[in-house]
Amino acid sequence: MNLWSISNARRRGASIFEVALAAAALGMVLVMIAQAMVSLDRARKATDNLDVASRELENSLKLYAARPWDELTTETANEWQLTEEVTAQLPGARVETSVEPVENPNAKRITVRLTLPSKPAPLVLTTWVFEPAGEDDVPGESDAESEPPDDNEEGEP
Image 1 (tube, one colour):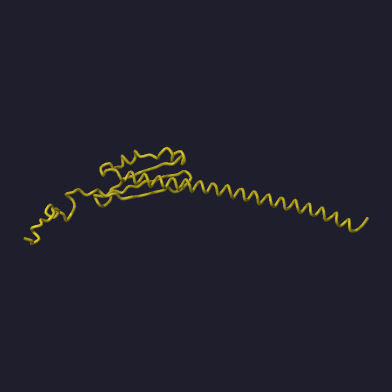
Image 2 (cartoon, helix red, strand yellow):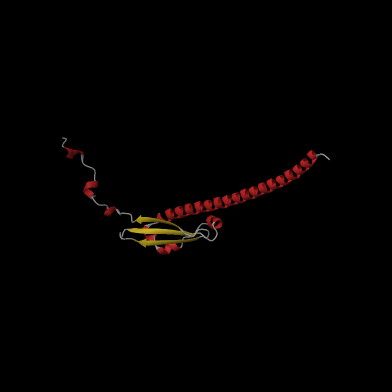
């Protein structure tokens, strides 16, 4: 028996052990990569849902604020609901709308609050709506000022 062949036999066993360790390490790395990809996908979906929720909130607030001044009340605000598409995409979402008077009697503050089960703090948007001025209420204008001037008044014969 040759001394050289004994050392080769030990070496082959060590290389099999090294390959097994490398395969185990590679398996752990692949599991970590898969878990990271799943986490990133969940974060992307949560971000997409938040984007949909904020767009829906903004659009609905604009639509509600465009109503006539007399219809901007808390009662009509409570009638507003999320669309079916948003309800399907964001199950468990709740919306609360309030119309509050402010110091200016010709203004109202409209607040829309969207609560999502996946988010601890609600999304809140607020806008202020001012009562449109009537034709008689415009300051600085009178009937005499709004009439066009006569051509003869400019001093021409």
